[in-house]
Image 1: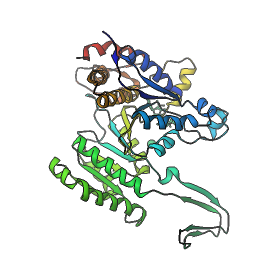
Image 2: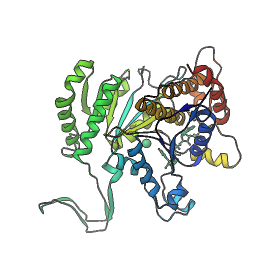
Image 3: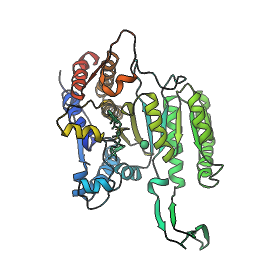
Image 4: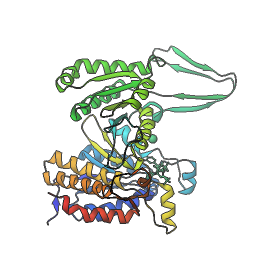
Length: 401
Ligand code: NAP
Ligand code: MG
């Protein structure tokens, strides 16, 4: 069979540790034998971020703006321990935060559901997609330690001041911001995404306590919905619901699933991890950043799986689950195919997804899935990462139309 040709490039963003190893193998074993990859490569491994003073991260984000589709491997967000471990000149910012700040947009995370893995929450029958606002709040916050006797204020453009706190003793202060522009595009991305998947949209914030900040989110969503989406939602037979974030959380737990849950940046960070593990495993969660201009960056929702990487370095075999990283690649290839109207690329992406799922459904899986898998007449078997990838490879041909 001749290899599938791509019209346009995708932006390939390499990363760190165990996921960097998965990355190379997924490409070699599952993609390159079928697709003539046209790609623009950026190495966001921590060594190269240090070498380029983190310029490579910005270049990668601008490349996604240019080409429209990117796929990203998980990357280390440095902390003090990583600064020592990698001998860094600076505690570089989270690459995801840098990329999100440049692309703006919203991150949509959806669990990958497999026959045989039941969600922990009995009422959930369909996946719940989390839409995480990807700009501002605590992720671009400014923080300071305030010494005894300090005074923190907000200085307004007209010279007036708002007192935050007068510190009798030492303490801490944090300033966060958001912009109307970003909240508007967040709202539009969520309404559009809900329409595209024909599912209700829920949004929760804490407007009763945060009467200006969170209330702004609530008002902007209501305004955009009323002016731009009410009619389309009615025609599509779906609804938009606003509620307090704690109410939303409680309702999610009793719902049958099958809706899009819009969350502010921090809520989305936390709730997506909760949903991922309740639906099965963090290793079974896809993630896509959609910019308001319609650029897409696909990745796995999990991190670089450091603990497994150290085992791998010790020569031990690991059973790291590559499914979310495979789905990051298939998401990007499918979107490239959709945008370029190269249907065979879309077919290949779908074939790789169904081959991956059918290997698990036949009982071959990485160890993280063993305790949560149960299917009549199937005796699950835990295998190492590479054995799993090879099992998927041997399955692909029978899934290609
Ligand atoms: P993590 O890499 O997501 O791993 C946490 C634990 O979850 C693992 O130790 C493992 O549990 C389990 N796990 C996650 N993914 C798995 C997979 N694919 N297969 C099997 N098990 C999996 O989170 P972390 O250890 O907190 O963070 C490691 C590094 O990743 C950090 O440097 C962090 O900055 C970075 N990070 C990057 C991103 C990103 O780039 N998007 C996101 C989050 C974190 P067991 O050890 O019990 O097997
Ligand atoms: Mg998180």
